[in-house]
Length: 258
Image (cartoon, rainbow, N blue to C red; front, side):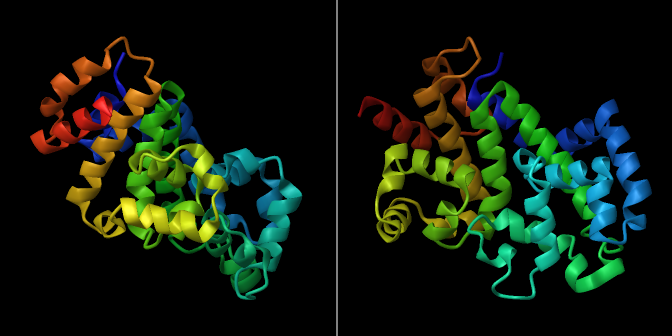
């Protein structure tokens, strides 16, 4: 079994190939084929909600799998759309809901909502990525969190953005060496602490973002372990084979000693 950093690097070092392999898995391939065949025929919110395979596919693609059961809530989200500043999508802190309502904007675009690429191939691409992250997380939550952060972090510009997404916040707290209980601190102070301890501008630099994810996966391994039989010291010794710089290893060693 792989350690957190090994499993993450195995996927992230050739993400395109990993996504291609995931898309070719029989159950995923079937769901993609069905979605591609049917999505352009979905003209209304009723059509969308009543076709359970389409609905579940879309929900999973946008990371909302845990809310699949809440059809009344999702219907309200879609019925109110995104054009009104007081709509449900615009009031929710979690940005996933607004993104979902923007893509399936039946309220604003009517019957043309599903003809655009973002509702078709864009959603397919996200579905495959979500399945990759979810399946990786079945073995090791740290790998799922790292892959998710890698994908979402470039859109984040403030500490508040990290706080708005529970998964992003969990990674940020690990990187900043903050306990989960820090979430009870005043919101403004939380954002300030995160911005003090993490250079959010680094999210825009793929190289620096990758270094952050390497750091996170090692910290996660140290704090939580993994399903791997490989011990943390062995992970650190082998780290350079996965592209970890000597300076990063030194930082990790110092954190571990502290």
